[in-house]
Image 1: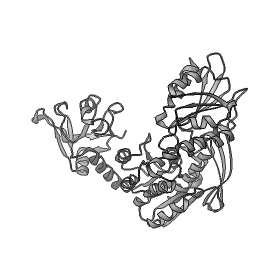
Image 2: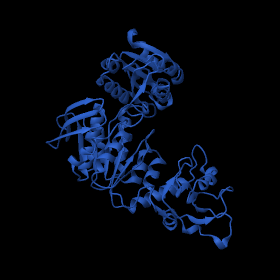
Image 3: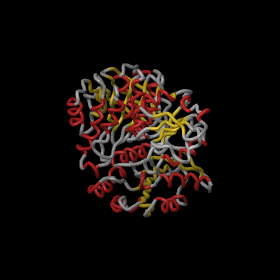
Image 4: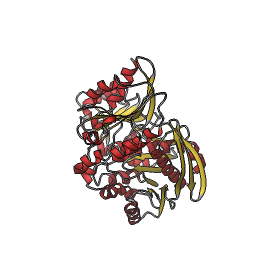
Length: 477
């Protein structure tokens, strides 16, 4: 947390809000003399000295203002003075707190002279954001969200939290429907826009991959003049993305992929459980580096990162060196060991943070690249992939090809949609199925064997993360 991210007067000037306090003795009011070291929208994680932003979303943040001050908030951004606010507590009153947060975000952007990178795509947004953080850390001071804050409040919160003196800031931008990215990218006004790839995520709402590409291409509408777009050349929708970039006025398009014509081209990939060694070509020049996150899909993310750093004028070699120690995050390929009650241990490949056909195929490919220890097996635990629309049944059944290519020895499924994969899978690898993740977890724990590699993946709504937690708790007990 910064010692002084926002003073009272700076925050008031940015939002046009009124500095005041409810109740108290007017002779001792010092409400205008506060400073906030950070911003928080959640009292459970609020740190002392932060300003609490009372957003009204699933719950009304005004109900938690008193709790925020109990936890040491320096002030609260509110649309009304809650009756339970402590007497004399500093308030910044605005007509709408979400718009007030956006105003702080705009002011934070305007007072900073660093370079901004925005990342979107059907998969790989958070992994690419974390790679960018690691790659740019050797080139200057970096700001990025600690979590996947990529929606209508997450992006402005990340921007409003940006210190005035950072050199680089990174923003993950997501969407469920067309039109959602446009206001967010215009708020960020990035100097570089990265699209990781286009897959079937949210196809239920958008209808086709081309429509998904068009929605993702909204990111170009906020790009600063002379900004650059980093695009996946191997993606079937590349032509759509390129044409929309040009239409939006983008003058510089940098491509990455395995195709011969890619500006940043993957020539050779060699990976194991610890990471990967990559030989690439950067505008024709050789570039060899290592990444701590295994998987060919992570190598593609790394190429996009190198392209973004190059677009900013940074050293590609120094940026690539920063990726060596970067490990996969929890839910996105993180690996851990769990001891079995009867002796031995299993490896958990945690891919439980969300899923669509593209990311599921990538996770299965990674499982196939890993070698079980001793007499262990490759075990795939798969939950439903949601928001896939009318093609959902076929898309689940189509997972058979990557499942077989990964040489999976045991398949467990949780949910109803994934049954379409179960029915096509060879009987020899069908290990267990259940209607929900919690029920399935009780089956899996007793059937794991020493040396198994257990890959767990499904949409967030499938709650397969509970299976990861159950294996860790049950196997280690």
